[in-house]
Length: 484
Image 1 (cartoon, helix red, strand yellow):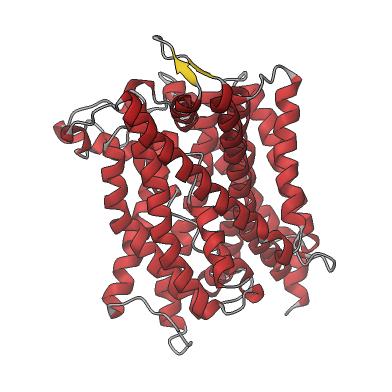
Image 2: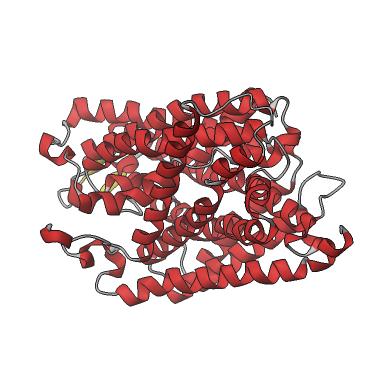
């Protein structure tokens, strides 16, 4: 992997097409909070990972950093959370948006067809991840280019749509940040700001990780802010705020603006695409599905490799730590992840009785909370490794000395920890100290009045995942004993 490969890889991981609608659904203040969190989280997080990735460029990345800082048990359990969030994500929000996009632009998927299509999506990604990095790296590159083309074409179409039909005005007051908006937006905004550490999981297959990781982080950070923020603004211009849904916001906006090439919007808001509009809509829908698939693939390439390194190190069963001689990838971890994603997809679709919005909300919330709990342990590694290994060559160091290290660590760790709290208990802090709002209103719309049901969708799987981490550690005892 060369410098440009790492840049495209990061763009593919950072620009999340599955959460654009969730941010747009909160109105213009979503853009305000995105700007605030870019400074308060994105920048500190990027500085933190740039130092860790360039100072400790070893296979396994985040797992190795955490192990050096806190030991194998903590790092192993933590790595389980980091790894398992990928099959939850692929079998959850990525899969449901891909299916919704297909149904919106192509054809309905009744009954068993929905299950079949979901499994094709999951296993198509799994077979891609199995390939060698030399081959597999082209998938994130294709995903990054698909994002640039899709979002660029969408923005051009928004301009054409605005010239023909006008746009919805966005009053300045709606950009004012509120606490209610913050607790609703912080999970999805920060989730789309993470992924910088993923290339470090394959550091030994990078041309020059000490040089390329910091540069790729800087460049991809600027690119992702534009590629993520501009479409959200476009959605707000095109759709009435009350019609923007977390699941279908971006899909609906695409369909609406493509009417400029052929089609119409009825008085009740129903969109019909014809002629060139239908053709271009279909191409854009295919691009969106490719973008979703490559998001899962890019994260899997990093998270799965780190899990294999953990198992080979004695933090899990040794057979999962085997790297294929043919492909140079952790094939067993990749296939196990696909099985887990398939099971989660089928079970979740049944539990929600096919309710896409409910399935999407529960799956995305669990993906983010699982990932962020692992970050609560990984991020403080910077402080510990600065103390334990002061003489390690650091091609890039967080500026500001000891104060700078403490500042970026506290900001990054504090915000992800807070995010976990508001995901498990939506509305945390709303209505406190005489402020406006009700905590119940912060629940996802699909779980309105069902706080217990929503909480169980988060707490029960998280408890199970932590248990799996402890079981994996026990299964790795033979490996650990052989190394004494």
